[in-house]
Image (cartoon, rainbow, N blue to C red; front, side):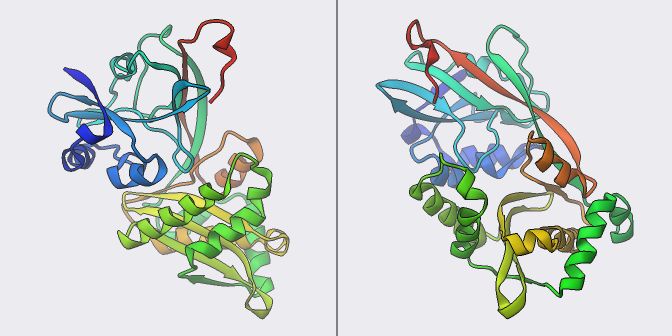
Length: 303
């Protein structure tokens, strides 16, 4: 039986135990992670927590909708089996949820093509099992060139950058283009990085130039078998000097030969995905779905 559970009815220990048993477990679906990115989240549960499906929901203009929170890529179905169909979970969504737009894990399938509008999206994933030399052979020529440029600049790469500083660099660079990010979202980002660090599920890296000025910084969350590139920022000096290339190369060299992969968080934007593929990462396809139960004239609603 598949049932929809309100937040207070969910057993977080059994929820996370289901994630522990899943071959595709992701931080995005952990109870503590959901508490930070989507306070009051609900869930859809199969049987005795044999499979779980996170639900983040809000209201806008009196309309209840399910959405994909910032700092998560997708949700979907998690359980012991692979290739799980999301259809029965989506169909279990309460009738008052009139609009849904979120993404499914890459291992999920949507069997009923008329259940939702779908859009293919991509992220980039790098297998770190090769040694340093093998992984370096997968780099694009432009990537190698930028790493060498960073060496000539004399940049220093250090761990232990404060989350507040990473959020500040991100906000003052890439964040300037993201008008949908509000001050509360940056506060949530800092809290998320701090929570990851407290659980041993994250590492922060910074690239420093002249006068010890930070020219790039990034936070990579998770642990083996999957590290996830959460957020980063790079100054104009850092961009021209290959600082971010050097930072990522440092992380790859540190974890080369491990039973892990580096998930670049991903992008379907050609320039960004090309940057990640420059380190030898391959595209992984997943589905974003939209279900619109609204009647005219409200069907133009967007979350």
